[in-house]
Image (tube, rainbow, N blue to C red):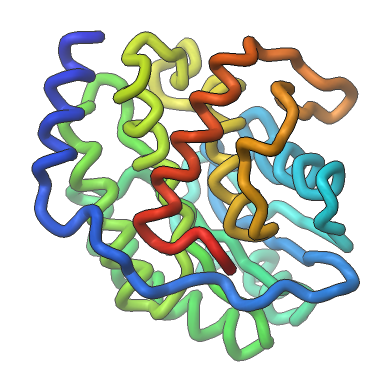
Length: 251
């Protein structure tokens, strides 16, 4: 797997357009605390990404007034568009940011992502919120799809005039530094705790405006902090910053 990772790191570095600034960022955060709505599937709820992000923000000076997750197994944006619960959550107007994720969407899923991204973005903006897309990753068996996944999410954010959390690119940045990092879980698709932590770091930087490298070397959990090697933590924090630099790291 290490050889395959190195080969596809080269492909990603050479892929056209992936490093371009989309010019889309979340809007300014409110003073009384962020209100975050997550829409997605198991790539969002595995390891409880919303809770992890909220802990990072809260513990480091960015209040979180509320957060909610509308994430279900195997759901894509078309499924959420047909879900009254998801649409009712958006239409409540209670959110500053609505963070949306489909699946890898490298090939057959791309048309759905591109079709529904503007629909969701317009609906979110109609309530006064800011739409942001959470770029994910392909399975370990399809590493060659990393550039296509990144391209799909950049296209979706650009067409929808939305923000972008380039998590998939942050994974690749981390592997450039250490190809042996275990970002996948046991099934080779869902994230490990490290993978989810890296996703949270990308989001943390954009939403707070603070550098992830100023955070402690710990992965926040619901009941406790999971210690992580200092070197690994710093590597992941730097990878998040490098990926965010491609889209603009300030809200």
